[in-house]
Amino acid sequence: MSKGITPRSEDYSKWYNELVVRADLAEHSAVRGCMVIKPYGFAIWEKMKEVLDARFKATGHQNAAFPLFIPKSFLSKEADHVEGFAKECAVVTHYRLKNAEDGSGVVVDPDAKLEEELIVRPTSETIIWNTFKTWIRSHRDLPLLINQWANVVRWEMRTRLFLRTAEFFWQEGHTAHATKEEAVAEAELMLKEYADFMENYLAIPVIKGYKTASERFAGADETYTTEGLMQDGKALQMGTSHFLGQNFAKAFDVKYQNANNEENYVWATSWGVSTRMMGALIMAHSDDKGLVLPPRLAPIQVVAVPIVNKKTIDRLDDIRAVFDKIQSGLGGDVRFKLDDDDSKRSGFKFAEYELRGVPVRLALGPRDLDNGTIEIARRDTLEKMVIPIDEAADKITALLAEIQQSIYDKALAHREAHTTKVDDFDTFKQVLDEKGGFILAHWDGTAETEEAIKKATKATIRCIPIDAIEEAGSCVFSGKPSNKRVLFARAY
Image (cartoon, rainbow, N blue to C red):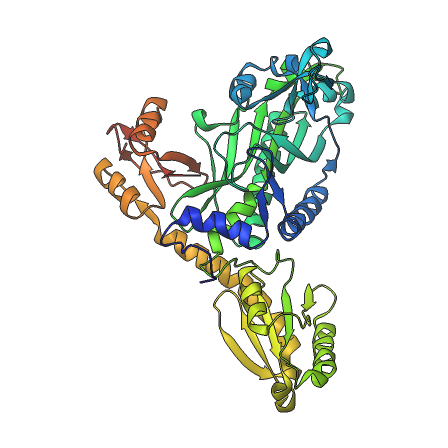
């Protein structure tokens, strides 16, 4: 265990908070509930953005940017939407400050009150659909496939770095279609894109499903979700895709003229993932020594550490030459760092790179040089191996792929070991308290039962799995008939 980090088994929440700070990912800011994402943490987020952005563009989407401020009246146009976000909105009421007459500082100028208050963007459906009204006239304008990378504000009182902050970064896709079928297909496509990214880059297995009516996005007809399981047995909603029907089109009067010159409302979707994925990455894989990063997202994939002292410093150039040759053999796509800073001892460096989750570490000293060998350590299993220098590049290439898969396999095994089928409520409560994880149980389909289970156990229906098998059963709580199991868990 790295000095100063609380073990997971002792206090998982404290372990997480300490690790985020100690690994140089983020820190609390002077603004309550907000965070500063540090360069190392932002480098991971940038890699996520890079991969997702390429995927969005490959499926025909274009990036655009919309205002941070939304007129209050816009939120009033879609009743479910305003109800869903009303308690989280930050509101701008004035546009100017002035010096206080008593010299105590600045105060809000009461004469600078806005005619209409502005909402700091909690999500952009309303401002975007007001814009779409001017962009869409004909069926030739459809489909309209837009994505925005942005920051949003949702006024949270209880915050945790990356998982829940008042301000966070995300992307939000917003699309308009001529038919319901096209819009549903779009929402399902983006769900698949998210799940594929989460499994193949974050190395986190996810369950795809759709939310119950009470858990849907405000203003959506259907919300699709990807649910991941963290090491402490709690679920995390990692990304959502929404079929919005014609709700926003009707609220903002967005119509198109079809080939027969008939006017119809368009059909809509929206979908998004956020810096919450950073929290998932940490909680799904990391250990008491620090971060465990999947190679595809690691800012540094391979770190090379020369092992020299005052007596052997004259061999440093020879060691550097070997590392240069290995790096050249790996090609330009591998993110490689040579740490030849002689102000820090090699043992300190090893611990630091373990803390920061670098997947592969190389160590080479004069004795290794004379023997023609090099030490390779992998972060996920902490295994060390000594191999011939000439084989290093090929071994590292294979190892990066192996580590990526191994991290995923470990997370999948954890999820499978913590997914339990339950048929009665006493067992349901026992599994939640003693084992945690996902519970597959029958539900009678009513909001009353859903709320009663939540109140009694703090567990929610994470989703109705897309691949849920039709089977006759009885609701775990009410005993009423049910035709499939849904996914329950306590969640972040």
